[in-house]
Amino acid sequence: MTTRCGFVALIGAPNAGKSTLINALVGAKISIVSRKAQTTRAAIRGVVIEGDAQIVFVDTPGLFAPKRRLDRAMNTAAWGAASDADIDALLIDARAEISSARDQAQSQLPSALTEGTQTILAALKQTTGPKVLILNKVDLVDRPNLLALAARLNAAATFRETFMLAAIKGDGVERMKQTLAAMMPPGPWHYPEDQIADAPMRALAAEITREKLFERLHDELPYQTTVETESWNDLPDGSARIEQTIYVSRESHKKIVIGEGGRTLKSIGSAARKEIIEANETNIHLFLFVKVRENWLDDPERYRAMGLEFPKK
Image 1 (spheres, rainbow, N blue to C red):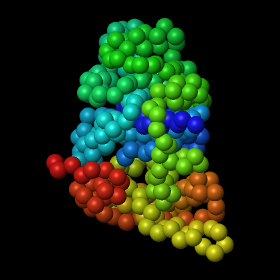
Image 2: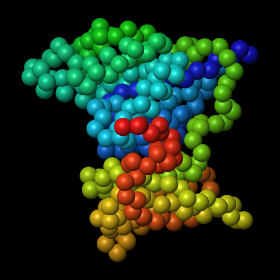
Image 3: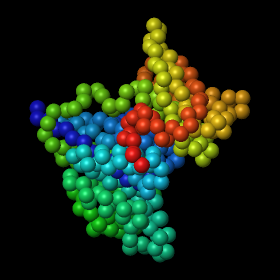
Image 4: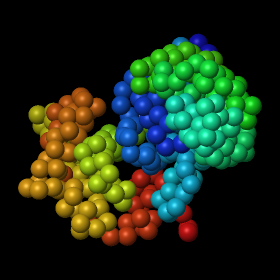
């Protein structure tokens, strides 16, 4: 059998739905989802089999105007994945784009795109591979506005295909997989047939706990927070003992994560343990610790641990 295999980089603004989409494509949770923007920090790969094709989807950090060193590292990771991919897939939150453009234009039917989208499109033109457009959350937009948005985007850049999805419901996902599979170049598969992600389980476990931090603390939680799986020991009864450390940059942040009487940390641990069990398909014993690590955003080692390149400036 002749096989196909290639990489598709999912790029777009924060909260466009990239993590939700890659989870829907893979059929399992491999990327954390949060209403807090910019939660995906490094490129995460999900593996999908469609007929004779293996498609490796790369969930990249959301693109935005960088203000900090971590922001610049995340943008570099996203564009690095785009330049290395066989296909670049621009994901647009249709509802947010239409609403923001309308506010920007102060009219009912905006004729322009938002500044953020225009910036991404300008940078996308510098990549050499084929491009596809994915409009997400189309179930929340009326058809005239949706078609007008698709026309504006296709006029601004050359897209080989335009897909309209409601990723959270799975609508349109199968058609997109089939179309992208046919676009993959001939070649051997990069991953075993039963592998759905290339992240080790201890890294995924850390990401799950970080997601529960966002869910539990919302706007109270600063971005200067990271989670590391310090140890993972498989036990004779088939279960595993996991120790994770939540690193914050200030003592006041530590108190927020722990909560009164330790209740917040216990709630985070309980939610994370349940989801890690589902991902690992075995019982686990999860122990969480909170430590202050000042100035970790300027520590090259921490960036390497997150799979990011440390920016010089």
